[in-house]
Image 1: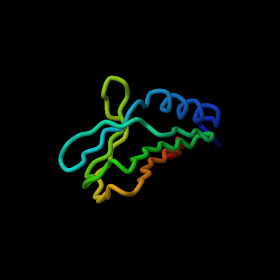
Image 2: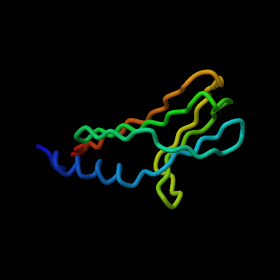
Image 3: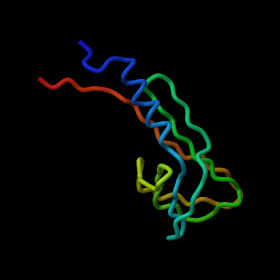
Length: 102
């Protein structure tokens, strides 16, 4: 039996999507701000994409996604060596779900 309905989970995912604003990446020890490339909502699954173009290069050690007032919503440590001549697509995948504990 569902406690949180499918509709409610989808609305929670929609709310999260509406709050996300920008990505902050730590590259070679310096924080740099990037636009979010795409936000795709599929029911209760939210995919967040950050595209780094060929101008960006360096060692990426942290990826964050923030709202408009710089609150961190998503964060992870990374160790990616981004060469200048390649594109790089970073992503987060979130699923709104419930766990029934008895």
